[in-house]
Length: 136
Image 1: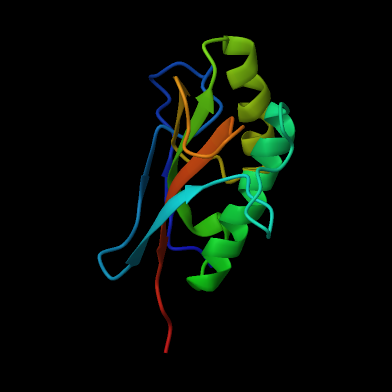
Image 2: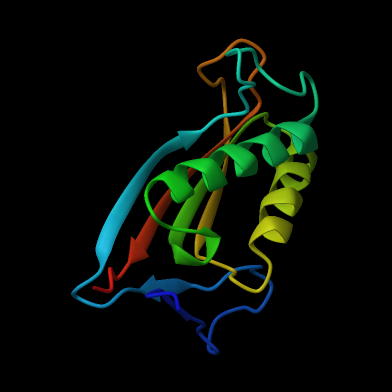
């Protein structure tokens, strides 16, 4: 069972494809994840030139980091999706992959177009925070 409670705001627009807020109980352990990058095991950038492919690789990386911290996608309390593009359509392509990966766990998210990201050929990066309650 996840410690995260998603909050929907009925008075706000229903166009947003995510909850407007999220909470975790006071005994939750917060996990701050580094930006999940689309890197292959050998350190090369995956899916060069492909926003959807890089977003999918970022999700794979995010899932691995969450697992290493004892968490899963349903423990994520918020995300920031960075896309190296000034075209809304490119942002939308990356966002669709992220949204689909989270499914019904539609965490509060921010989608940003940025000038550049850190690795050669990198187009997408996903930052996340998760919350878990460790049960003894």
